[in-house]
Amino acid sequence: MKIKETDVAIVGAGSAGLSAAYQAASAGAKVLVLDENRLPGGQLFKQIHKFFGSRAHQAGTRGYMIGRQLLERVEQSGAEVWLDTLVYGMEKNCHLGVIRNGEHWVVKAKKVIVATGAKENYLAFPGSTLPGVMGAGAAQTMINVNRVLPGQRILMLGSGNVGLIVSYQLMQAGADVVALVDAAPNIGGYGVHAGKIRRAGVPFYISHTIKQVTGKDQVEQVEIIQVDSKFQPIPGTEKTFDVDTVCLAVGLNPMTELIWMTGCEFCFIPAFGGHVPLHDGNMETSVPGLYVAGDVTGVEEASSAMEEGNLAGVAAAEALGLLSPEEAAAKKGEIRGRLDILRSGLFGEKRRSAKQSQLQNMADYQQKKGGSL
Image (cartoon, rainbow, N blue to C red; front, side, top):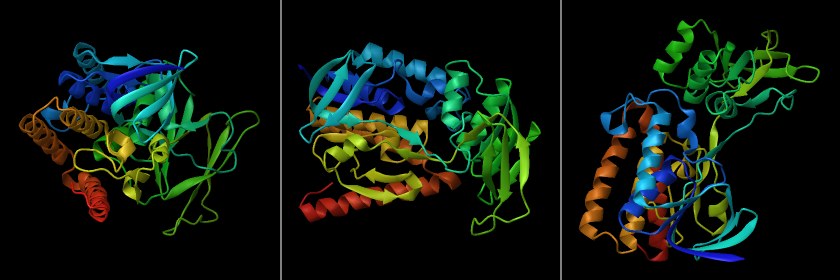
C-alpha cells in the first residue's frame, strides 16, 4: 500500500471539483484531484448547448467550451489530477482509500472536498429492463461524447430541463423523438427549451406515464397511459408508439456514499434530490475539514456547482492559512453574490429556499454541539 500526502484532496473532477481545485491551488495549496473517469470535466463536456443567464455565468457559451476553459485554468494552477482512480472509502480524519492502476493508496489530506455529483433516477415498469431503456444522461453521453446514436425512434419520459435538452440534442444527432411524456400536469423545464421541441413538431403528453414497454430482445413498442390528479392510471386512455429506445429523465439524486462513511450529519430535502449533507456557509460539513460542493449538496445546475466549488476551494485555502481572512472574505462575498443571482427568480426560489433550510439545519446542529457558523 502506498501513501500520498497533500493539502487538499478533491473527489470528483467535474465542474464543482475543478473549480475548487483552481481556487485552492491558486492560493498556494498542494491539491490532488481524483476521478474514476478517464477524462476530466464531468457533465460539462456533454453539454453542447449554450448557457444562458448573466455574463458572469458565461451566458451564450457552450458547456463543453466552459469545460475546456476550466481545465486550462486548473492545469495552469499546478493542481495534480489522477484519472481512472477509484476512491472507495473515507474516514473522519480526511484519509481516503484509493485504487489507482491496480495499486492501493492511502491519500492523507489536511482538507477534503467531495464533489461527486449526482446519479440518474430509474423508473420500474413492465419491460424496463429491456435493452433500449436508458437514462437520458446515458443517451447524452452516447451522442455528445462517444458520437453514437442510441436509437432511431425515441420516446422521452420527463419534461424537466434534462428531458427537454437531451430530446433536442437527440434530434440534432439525427434521431426521431416521437413523443415527450410526463406524469406531471405541467412541463417541468424552461419554456425556451420546451418551445424548441414543440416547434420541431414533437407532441407532449402531459399527465401521462409509461404503462409498459414490449419487445422480443429489445425495445419495440412503448405504451403510455393518462393519469389523474392523484397519478392513478385512467383505463382506456392508452396510446402505443413504435420505438427502439426509451429515455428516462426522471430526476437525479446526490452521490453521497463516501460522505455517509464519515458519520456526517444529513437532512432530507426533496427539492435537492433526497438526503443531502449538512454544511455551513463555507461548504464545510459537520465533520471538521470535510467540505462538499456541487450536486452532492443538492441537485442544481452546472453554474451553481462551479460557484459552490469556488466557495469550497477558497474556504479550504483560508482554513489552511493560505488566504488572510480579509482576502477570503472578499472572494467569498463575490461568489455568494453570484450564487444569489443563480437562485433568484421563479425557478430559483425553490432552490434558494432549500439551501436556506439546509444551512439552518446545520446552524441548529452546531448550536446543539456548542459551535457556531
